[in-house]
Amino acid sequence: MAEANTVPVTILTGFLGSGKTTLLNRILKEDHGHRIAVIENEFGEVGVDNAILESGSEQIVEMNNGCICCTVRGDLIRILGSLKQRRDKGELKFDRVIIETTGMADPGPVAQTFFVDEEIGEYYLLDSILTVVDAKHAKTQLDEFHEAQEQVGFADRILMSKTDLVGEAEVKSLTERIKRMNPRAPIKPVHFGEAPIAEILDIRGFNLNAVLELDPQFLTEDHHEHHDEVESFVFRSDRPFDGEKLEQFLGGMIQVYGPDLLRYKGVLWMKGKAKRVVFQGVHMMMGGDVGKPWGKGEKKSSILVFIGKKLPKDLFIAGLEQCLAGAKVA
Image (tube, rainbow, N blue to C red; front, side, top):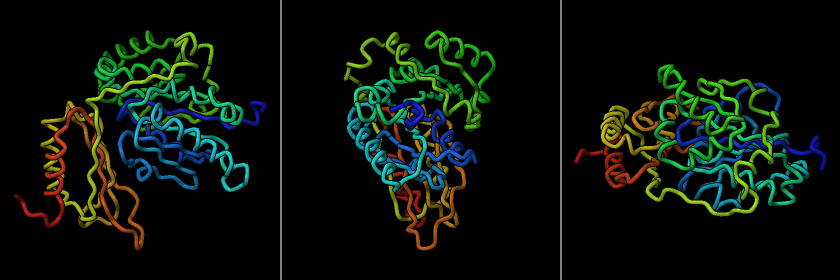
């Protein structure tokens, strides 16, 4: 199929909490005329990004239960194939796809999908790999996690978030480090996902030859490892939270376990609030925003996902139970 007729695909990657979903939300809300199908992959048994994304008519498909680059790669091929069939039949209208990977994904094997499956490779064009780098936490992440290094190494464009939270010297040092790791990828600061669409879509940044120089086994290797100490767990409730109790509890837990809390986020039902609250955090930094109103007749509930290193799951779950409205303090 000629390139002009293929569907361009952007792989959006970056470590946990770097700002991928914020950027994606910004893309989906902007009036740019693009019709976008989104494939979401999250680390753990359940995802919350689908609830966080403020999409209009975009098609959003979630993939959970593992890393997009290994255990669910078959699902990725299946979903891309399904989107193709529905588009060809006129059931779906989209002119591009964005794949947001889990923060623990190595983007190399994701990109590999478009070259090892003939049908997928003929229908879809891998446009670029965009990597969001968290200026506040990147040094530690690059030191400790192979995945963070791979995300930088495979990037065609790098968007550096949270530069306002660090000094100029730290930004300069991180920029120099990234350039040593990947001299071919332009680096641009991005504030709350505000990046020109022209610098994100249709940039034709992916170059297979350049990738093969970086990783000669790119088209053949199928081995991938994760840090086994990184785990996730989920808290759900169909009772509302007491806002004051929740803030106090989470504040205390973050003070103790913040360094090991890689990412935590959720959609919350708060007592006395007509709208859901979107809650997100990375290490010691957390915050909440007012989300969409609860729909008429919609069942209200809360879901929180925690990703970290050797976290005391039972302690978190018990504490969150105590934060629900009407809960008796033990």
